[in-house]
Image 1: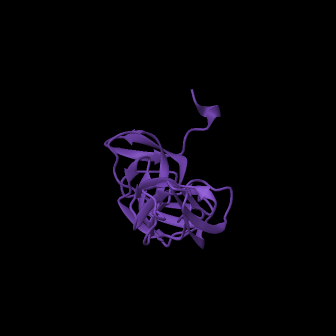
Image 2 (image 1 turned 90 degrees about the vertical axis):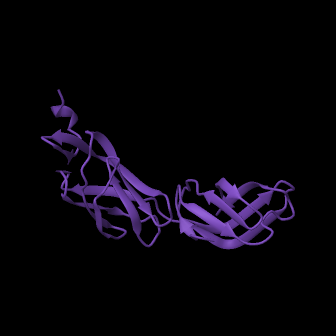
Length: 186
């Protein structure tokens, strides 16, 4: 199984033989007791998307076929903490601005990030990343507007987001800016 740990939206590939347990297809897959969304299935490979879990738990991966047959592997999946962005510095900038994003569990239990976007725009460069800090270089955006910070780990899915940026058009290049305080809006 790959990966063997993750969180909400992690894409998990399960490989084996007779995964349908003599049935024709799977009707349910659970990861550590939590139902997962089946994306693709064959008798030798099953791809699922992990659902949300109430905590960080290790448990059995269980595949149930249309006949009720169950194929399982004990302690094969671990839910990890959901990432949380706690800071963005600077919270404004433009093309080539070096931005540091801090938080916890930013890599969704993975070993690294493969993509980051700011307000819907892929960053120009991912400089460095760890579970507590991500440093990126902002790319240019064709449009202005509010948006999320999205991280994608090597697990293949977004691992956390934070609505913390607002893009503003400034001369010919957009800027990123923290949303205005409600007291100062007109």
